[in-house]
Length: 285
Image 1 (cartoon, one colour):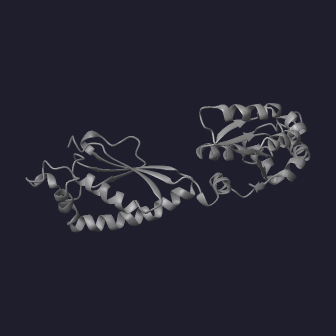
Image 2 (cartoon, rainbow, N blue to C red; image 1 turned 60 degrees about the horizontal axis):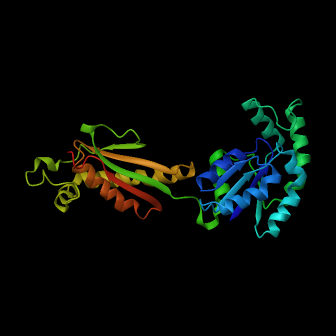
Image 3 (tube, rainbow, N blue to C red; image 1 turned 180 degrees about the vertical axis):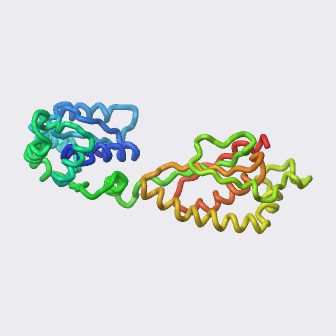
């Protein structure tokens, strides 16, 4: 079991780090009393949930943690577990600005000023900082960059979870899927519906595919749209997006949209993404 301690200065990005770890499958717990740490680990080990990764947030709010973490870490090590400490920091100027923007009181000195609280907190956490396996200065990082740094450290070469793309065909006659992030209208393409021997066949049929794909409009459209996706997908990854729903619609959702979704499936399959494909209205159109 991997045990990660998230700690550091108030306002330095610990909450963002925890959300990133939760997305990566970590069981996260905030401000657990340090005396319960060994008991918690024992309970997790006995749990039927098969928890593999645990992240605990411990900081200035838990004063007993600052007094007893060295002893507890030692006990956990003797029990055969490793404890990894990630310490989050930022410059005083940045921390003061963040507290000013959120209008929060500093948890270390509720009756004092924010600068006084930051100075006190630095003193109290100095020993823990020296034990850290990783120190992340978030002064110049936005939330997406911070998330990437955390996941890159946790997962190493494995990296973050792949972008999951849900490709779905639909018919405008039955309404646009509400969960769509991107909607592409392909009703401009020649329609197999008006070819008698194709009318009753679904878009998965090779004859329907050949009819749609042999058209010059289809080739031109796919070339442009694939180029657009080549720009969008890296951008979504940089911004921390992990799930994208791309909906392609034609009139009834039976022919053209199905063919285009299947072509996009083939194109994206080698693009380091996880694909899910549905044809919502193929049997209705």
